[in-house]
Image (tube, rainbow, N blue to C red; front, side, top):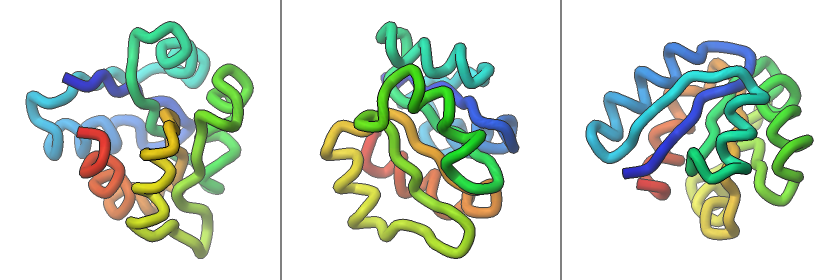
Length: 118
Protein backbone atom coordinates (compact mmCIF):
# COMPACT_ATOMS: atom_id res chain seq x y z
CA UNK A 1 0.00 0.00 0.00
CA UNK A 2 1.34 3.43 -0.99
CA UNK A 3 1.23 6.21 1.59
CA UNK A 4 0.21 9.48 -0.04
CA UNK A 5 0.14 12.90 1.61
CA UNK A 6 -1.70 15.91 0.26
CA UNK A 7 -0.18 19.33 0.90
CA UNK A 8 -0.19 22.46 -1.23
CA UNK A 9 -2.39 25.48 -0.86
CA UNK A 10 -5.61 24.62 -2.69
CA UNK A 11 -8.24 21.90 -3.06
CA UNK A 12 -6.71 19.46 -0.57
CA UNK A 13 -10.05 17.75 0.14
CA UNK A 14 -10.78 17.37 -3.57
CA UNK A 15 -7.33 15.90 -4.27
CA UNK A 16 -7.59 13.46 -1.35
CA UNK A 17 -11.09 12.41 -2.41
CA UNK A 18 -10.01 11.82 -6.01
CA UNK A 19 -6.98 9.80 -4.91
CA UNK A 20 -9.23 7.71 -2.68
CA UNK A 21 -11.71 7.04 -5.49
CA UNK A 22 -8.97 5.96 -7.90
CA UNK A 23 -6.61 4.15 -5.54
CA UNK A 24 -9.14 2.41 -3.31
CA UNK A 25 -7.30 0.14 -0.90
CA UNK A 26 -4.00 0.52 -2.78
CA UNK A 27 -3.20 3.75 -0.93
CA UNK A 28 -3.63 5.51 2.38
CA UNK A 29 -4.17 9.25 2.12
CA UNK A 30 -3.54 12.01 4.65
CA UNK A 31 -4.12 15.73 4.23
CA UNK A 32 -1.44 17.80 5.96
CA UNK A 33 0.19 21.21 5.97
CA UNK A 34 2.95 21.66 3.40
CA UNK A 35 5.70 21.30 5.98
CA UNK A 36 4.16 18.23 7.61
CA UNK A 37 3.62 16.56 4.23
CA UNK A 38 7.16 17.24 3.02
CA UNK A 39 8.60 16.02 6.33
CA UNK A 40 6.53 12.84 6.04
CA UNK A 41 8.23 12.14 2.69
CA UNK A 42 11.67 12.99 4.05
CA UNK A 43 11.24 10.72 7.10
CA UNK A 44 9.84 7.83 5.08
CA UNK A 45 6.43 8.02 6.76
CA UNK A 46 4.89 8.68 3.32
CA UNK A 47 5.78 7.70 -0.22
CA UNK A 48 4.34 10.51 -2.36
CA UNK A 49 3.27 14.14 -2.01
CA UNK A 50 0.52 15.81 -4.06
CA UNK A 51 -0.16 19.55 -3.94
CA UNK A 52 -2.03 22.21 -5.88
CA UNK A 53 -1.83 25.98 -6.17
CA UNK A 54 -2.46 28.64 -8.80
CA UNK A 55 0.94 28.17 -10.49
CA UNK A 56 1.64 24.47 -9.93
CA UNK A 57 5.03 25.11 -8.39
CA UNK A 58 4.83 27.93 -5.85
CA UNK A 59 2.40 27.14 -3.06
CA UNK A 60 2.08 23.56 -4.27
CA UNK A 61 5.75 22.65 -3.97
CA UNK A 62 7.71 25.43 -2.24
CA UNK A 63 8.11 23.62 1.08
CA UNK A 64 8.64 20.25 -0.61
CA UNK A 65 11.45 21.73 -2.69
CA UNK A 66 12.98 23.36 0.40
CA UNK A 67 12.82 20.17 2.48
CA UNK A 68 13.30 17.43 -0.13
CA UNK A 69 15.31 19.26 -2.79
CA UNK A 70 14.39 19.97 -6.38
CA UNK A 71 15.53 16.51 -7.50
CA UNK A 72 12.57 14.94 -5.64
CA UNK A 73 9.94 17.39 -6.93
CA UNK A 74 8.09 17.95 -10.19
CA UNK A 75 5.62 20.51 -11.46
CA UNK A 76 3.31 18.48 -13.70
CA UNK A 77 1.10 21.39 -14.70
CA UNK A 78 1.25 25.16 -14.71
CA UNK A 79 -1.10 27.74 -16.23
CA UNK A 80 -1.43 26.91 -19.90
CA UNK A 81 0.81 23.82 -19.87
CA UNK A 82 0.31 20.24 -18.70
CA UNK A 83 3.11 17.71 -19.04
CA UNK A 84 2.25 14.80 -21.30
CA UNK A 85 1.56 11.39 -19.82
CA UNK A 86 4.95 10.25 -21.13
CA UNK A 87 6.70 13.17 -19.42
CA UNK A 88 4.91 12.47 -16.13
CA UNK A 89 5.82 8.78 -16.36
CA UNK A 90 9.47 9.73 -16.97
CA UNK A 91 9.45 12.02 -13.89
CA UNK A 92 8.13 9.15 -11.75
CA UNK A 93 10.68 6.70 -13.19
CA UNK A 94 13.43 9.22 -12.39
CA UNK A 95 12.47 9.07 -8.70
CA UNK A 96 10.28 12.11 -8.17
CA UNK A 97 8.19 11.88 -4.99
CA UNK A 98 6.44 15.28 -4.82
CA UNK A 99 4.07 16.49 -7.53
CA UNK A 100 2.67 19.98 -7.93
CA UNK A 101 -0.05 21.13 -10.28
CA UNK A 102 -2.63 23.85 -10.77
CA UNK A 103 -6.01 23.37 -9.15
CA UNK A 104 -7.81 23.42 -12.51
CA UNK A 105 -5.72 20.42 -13.68
CA UNK A 106 -6.38 18.13 -10.68
CA UNK A 107 -8.83 15.89 -12.52
CA UNK A 108 -6.42 15.50 -15.45
CA UNK A 109 -3.06 14.92 -13.76
CA UNK A 110 -3.90 13.03 -10.57
CA UNK A 111 -5.19 9.95 -12.44
CA UNK A 112 -2.04 9.92 -14.61
CA UNK A 113 0.30 10.14 -11.62
CA UNK A 114 -1.60 7.40 -9.81
CA UNK A 115 -1.48 5.16 -12.88
CA UNK A 116 2.32 5.03 -12.57
CA UNK A 117 2.83 5.00 -8.81
CA UNK A 118 0.26 2.39 -7.80
